[in-house]
Length: 73
Image (cartoon, rainbow, N blue to C red):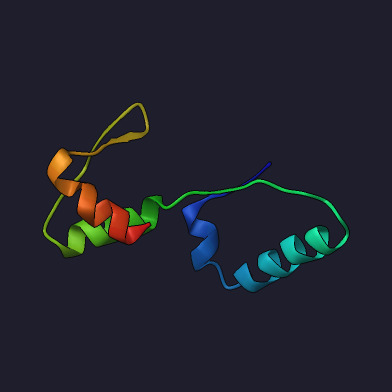
């Protein structure tokens, strides 16, 4: 399993990460890629005038924010 944080998508080297994943796939290595989206969700919520609360490092998502969160992801 490979976990990519949301910050990885914004990194200048992201295309290298994608190439490495593709290479592993071509070599027959089967991966489960789990991606994060915390910075994308935060930016999308903020641009729509919403704010998030966090508890122990986990976002508490209000029901009325779910559409916005889904769009960000």
